[in-house]
Image (cartoon, rainbow, N blue to C red; front, side, top):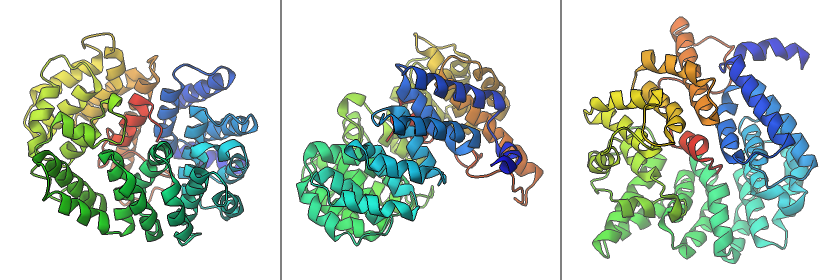
Length: 436
């Protein structure tokens, strides 16, 4: 470990002051659980892939929480999943302990097991797959199928036993991460078909269908295509968007799949969210905006009708309108938001988001100095967006200095100009503290 320290230090793209801030926040959270732990946990999820130092602090904190059986804490879930995503060698032993604890270490442990490749987890997962509680057995079996340790037959037999409340939790805490990840084995598809047959919520149906579609199952897309041709016009419109989303999930490169011709409405967007209705989640609107769907412009315009920009939805709408629809006046509105010149008490919380939006618009000369200012913000979200913006700037400079890509000192994933900072997962983690 001592011999690796110099290499890790050179690999860091997150600046030292920001790393110290996160390490201090983790230490403080272990001493006294903060009221905003979900947002701290979300910020850590976003920053962890880019900092070995932060992951070290998370690993130490995770060890303490596993010993305390603090399986319901957001910091525990964020640390466990982040280390599993990074394929950290320390996570396997901690996961084995957690899986043997109360409720199998919570759904976070079962989700993390899907992304941990260590073979030593197999006995614990096999034991849980035979548990009397059907939801725990189902979660463990999902992990086993994902890890190619099961042919999916037992998973399919368990599917009819999953109650609605457990289905909701499984969707949010296990299937949403799988929908974002690389394709899983096709063996998962029959069980998901059973769950979809019992699912009345279109947004959750779509999540289950995306996991199946990415595994190679053509059934969900065909079902959505057929349903888009029958029934009331509102239902046909919704299913046409579902069909497009499933096609886009299999071919996610921008421009590969033509955006749909269906004009979105507030009701349609709400129905297509995997979140509860009370969250007023606009994920699907920005999925359409990211695909440059022209018919979503009226809804984006409605989001920025009142200036200055006053919430997260308005900031993101301004980004896409300025990028794709000629609203260059909104660039200044984003600059104002990044300076904190907004309306209402929440203007400070928008500064980091607006700064990242400026970076995504190609305004690096404005975004990077603003990101420097954010390092001292009281808002952990602002600190995170600022750090990601500066890290993207560092990564760009390294690429320009070494176009051949032979620099071996930048490990893991680094923010780049090609990958937007304001991607959906980062927004949900950092702004909302949604840890799915």
